[in-house]
Image (cartoon, rainbow, N blue to C red; front, side, top):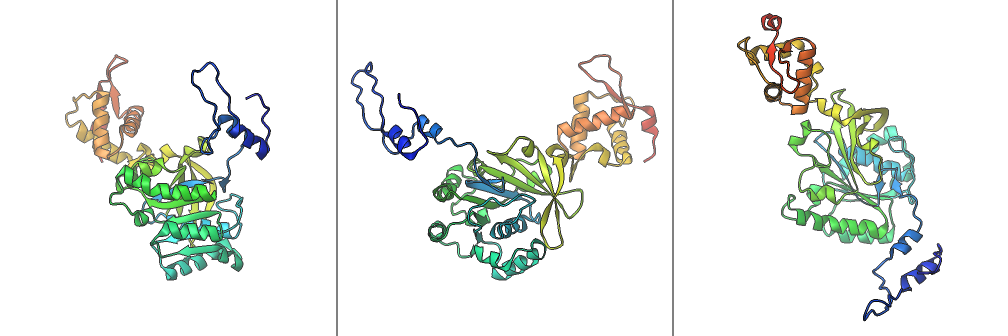
Length: 374
């Protein structure tokens, strides 16, 4: 194409319709480019320099907020709805929406519970009364796609919130990748049609509670997170009953730094979250969460008792790998965390390495450790 690309719609239309004939290709016929094809030149000419995301988090498409029971997922999404409707900050982030309107689909609460929590949370949020007219609730989820399409045609919204995915899924098996993708594709099409973010609430599996935050922690098929542009995990904290960790574990338009440390939140007595300004690395969440504690969070007497049992005979010798496996099995932790335990035991001189080889350890218990009372 020899024409200079201009930003006007007319120029873009010309590019779509322009065809370059390759005369050296036998039987090549010049035809008009069909409307369903977009050339790279056309897309480049759109000059998109920034992708809009609501509150710098939610892009157009499907997002996911996951977490274990009683972490406050529904509270967080209800707070999000109120903040959008009131054109207010959410977790310290400035509202940058277009309409200040929200559609919320609820399967887990009824009208009574929703009324209670709206009033309770607004004690802290302080949204004006007129803002609540901008939140539209749908409790009847039959033919949901048709209802959402009709409602968006009638009056568009900044975001659609769906609580919860498991209740809305109409397939037979949430672990079946093809069924999950077919279900989510309907909502993806809706989001793209109306340029609107859609966020689902979903649950994490029981096994994941002691694991690092991950996009793979949610219940069901891997196809769930694969279809999402943003996945966030909300976690309880060992730092206190009112502390939560909001972990961005997948974000197409979010920096890597934001995807390696949690946003530490505090929840008020009225179920409203605030950003503490602190961040916790995902690795530290694993170390301090439940059974997966860093060695310094366990009393020395427990470590000594373990070593005295492991080295029943004070002349026992273990390789580094063997002792790591014993530690991991006893404390129910990962191998990586178990290595930290072993390093601490060596640093405290509870065990010693009598090997002169750099490639192999010969670990023995310190005789003083063997004699300690616990």
